[in-house]
Image 1 (cartoon, rainbow, N blue to C red):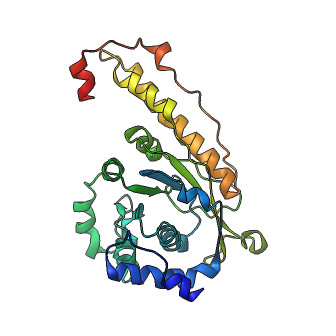
Image 2 (image 1 turned 90 degrees about the horizontal axis):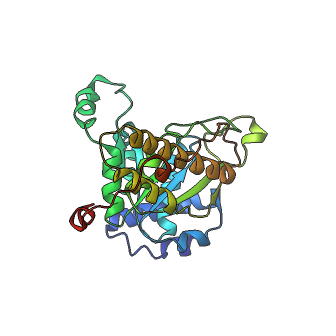
Image 3 (image 1 turned 30 degrees about the horizontal axis):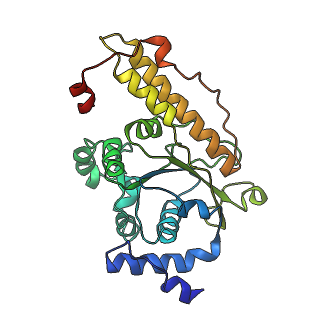
Length: 277
């Protein structure tokens, strides 16, 4: 196993130190992880949005390393709590995948308070959309924070809906299951992991509806409300798929999908305006 790990093709990762670090990480992680439906990773187009459930801090490092390794060094730009990026060594390792820092949490130490205040002006969703539009892949934890509940997912946040409507990329739900959680009666800090790769979700119909809503004439707030509802529909579908692959439940009601044609007529626009959009 050691030989195959250290000679695995990582040609898509140009930095030599990053390749060596990734091989070392996977050498230690590989015995702890089993993956179901690995073939779905190899069939994926670029770009793609990977959506994960979030159990503990360990997977924040382990899962990106394993998936980038299995994808031959092709990066996945993960949304990462900015505090992780300030931890010695761990932060350096995470920065090798060019993550998207999220500055929602306040600084725990005064030393980092001014840094956090300056950086919090950044818009993580816009950074992610830019990476998707240039052919990159993005990884997101739609629950928004760690969830140690053994059976239930947290309510999904709207960020994944914004990504879906802002870029032409499928969503790939990936379940992270800690095999010992039921035996221990809690979520392990470390332990054996099962990754389950779900079927990609295209959301073509939802993107068409979003375009119709964007083209609706006038200042009527109804299309804006419908667009928000559409993001909620997308989030709900992603979370339901994530529940299946994570062996958890999603205990929240679904929302009805808005129909743009029923709310506002689709306008006929000049060719030059259509080209700009």
